[in-house]
Image (cartoon, rainbow, N blue to C red):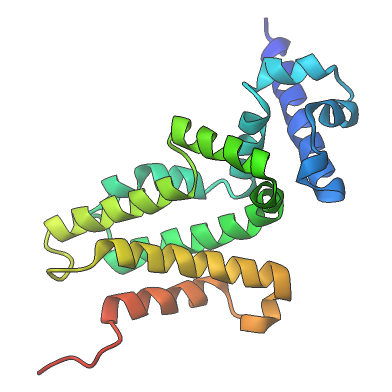
Length: 208
């Protein structure tokens, strides 16, 4: 009984690495289960003993690309009232930026493929996953902070959440497409801190 879990884990990791290699070298559309199995050196049916379907495989591959982000998304609303608002938003923004930077090369193919795009939409809706889930979790966190009196009254929560995640996505997209030097070679933490500060301070002059 002892070696079996490790053996299954090793094979699962081999399949994930094979999927990553196929996507890196040939693109997402070439990453069929048959091709992944060939690269992994296993039967195609073996993939379905470890993953529900190809989308589940891709989800785990994406999650492994930036492992700190999805657990943070899951616990974010429960962090209200803990630490500082600025610190939590900066931590979340940096994790989001690194996650987007890691996954954009993988998901680009699904955006231009209508069939794959529709399958992914259905998958996100059924599993409560995907970018909208991250956005809603951030909104829940901000609302909870507001209820604790740690935000100003009347804050447009939806806009603030979209601004932070949108800035992270935009930075990741430009880094990949045009190169990180376009927005300046500054640390991710500095970029996110600037966005968070703009959100917290606002852009209009304060009234006396």
